[in-house]
Image 1 (tube, rainbow, N blue to C red):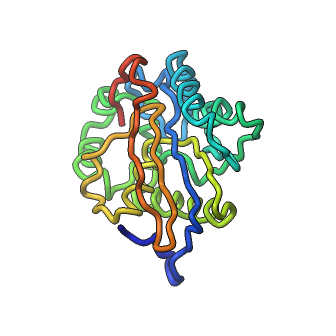
Image 2: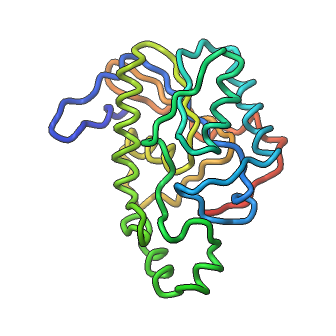
Length: 226
């Protein structure tokens, strides 16, 4: 078990036995088209809404103290589906956004290679450490996501909270808690509508489950994209 990540220059945050349920947003139109989303947005498909509904059914029996989401539409809508059975309003946090891919957003790999093969190929070769033109690095993503996680944990001691977000931020939380080297980023995958659970203990956060898709297994399989 690892301890909760230590803020720069500070003591470890006491997770206070808070349970965080991280849900990736449902499938979007750009997911199907293989387009890079980042801070840009794309509407949920009907399959994506169904994935959100199945996640909501999965969490309906829990006593949720709050539902948070990225302020991007695909996460907000998924969060709203999850929050509805509990009579909660979705609280948005921009820090929970997907990684910013700058000039690459809205394009497919093929379109980027056709437009600027050298720039895109250079980034692909070391995309964990390099920022896309106008975008952010993987570490910058992790830093802001974990700031939001610490704030949410601090606001909800001994409570259960759902967070509707994105694949990159969910993986960032997993890697930070388990202290996994960023070079292993591509060895994990977070599916649309999946559930990842982090549980607080007196010694820190533990990963209780990761990328659980048992509730959405009957939904169409998504295409992989960046």
